[in-house]
Length: 105
Image 1 (cartoon, rainbow, N blue to C red):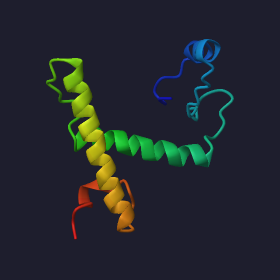
Image 2 (cartoon, one colour; image 1 turned 180 degrees about the horizontal axis):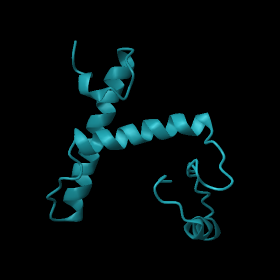
Image 3 (cartoon, rainbow, N blue to C red; image 1 turned 90 degrees about the horizontal axis):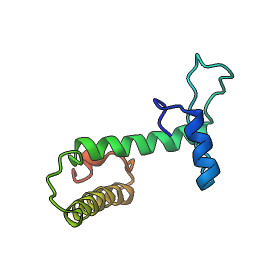
């Protein structure tokens, strides 16, 4: 979950209705502070980096689709482009989220 949005009511609602246990990193000034496990930190960083790249490089927020099919098509195209760049990086032995330089020699 988003670190900026910590709502115990929302977490309880998600769990009771959908059996989803929302894990959010606690702030250091909160009562009963527990450090976020490293495994989650690593995964979270990768996801946050990918979302940032989708917003910045692929301009995912700028969208002029008139219908849902147009929006879905654009999202699939942009996600496919990111995945292709990650695959190129993986095959070349580079960090997969360095998509800006994936096509560089």
